[in-house]
Image (cartoon, rainbow, N blue to C red; front, side):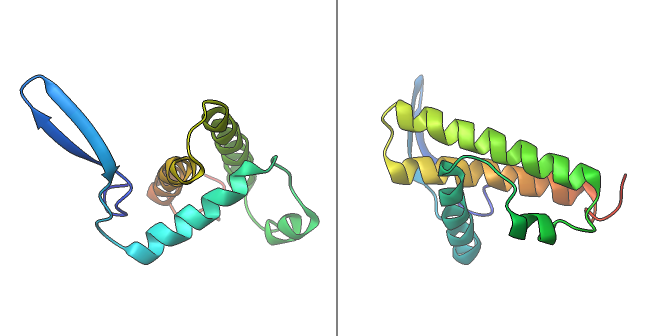
Length: 115
């Protein structure tokens, strides 16, 4: 998340801690792609016909993680919206969490094997 610049800046001194906007360090194009992708999690999760075709040949584990991510990120987006958070802040929060899913999956391996 820090590599992508999706971590909040911080101004701390003594017992005081103040977080600011995202740092915007790192790869701006990757950050932009994640923030744009995060917009899609506002809609209810579903596996469309096109997505079903793209998922052919993937392991069951990959599809399970994908479905879990869709549900979790949609639920988080909804909750943040109900709290009255600004749309752009919601996008960045979802992009940050999406990046953790991507990082976790890349740390496991190529994603095409079943274990």
